[in-house]
Image (cartoon, rainbow, N blue to C red; front, side, top):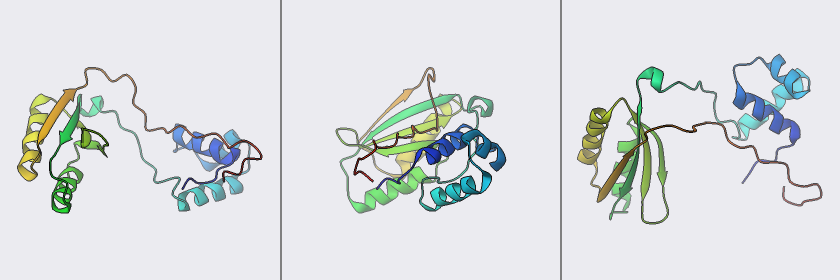
Amino acid sequence: MSAVLDDLDRKILAELQADSSRSLDDIARLVGASKTPVWNRIRKMREAGVIKRQTTPLDPAALGLTAPFFVTIQTPEHDAGWLERFLNAVSKRPEVVEAYRMAGEIDYILKVRVPDAKAYDAFYRDLISEVSIFNVSSALAMEEIKSSPDLPIPPAPPRGSDKR
């Protein structure tokens, strides 16, 4: 279920996504409200799970992680034991920065950040040593065109709408 947000909440979220290291005074000034109501709204959005955590985005290239691979996985096994082994194998690997269970022919897609193809090969060998996989296909991204942790903040429902 989606949280009910008003225009001020949306402004606060937009400012936090832009730079969450800003002071509460700065955020309040930018959204046109006083500090205490802004702080209360941030606290309520944290409690509601809208704001999950504060992080600092890092530059992958500056860390030498210049080879993003997209890995598609198919498996004939869908039992609880296999799934637990797979989730454990994926969760403990910091190279896996995103993982999705899919609908359709592909069962899972992983985004893996490594320095180079040799590091990806080591990751791949470790993964398949822990969990059996029917088919793995990997694609190296040649250029990152857009990557953003920012989410689009949905607009408010039209006035008089009963969707709350």
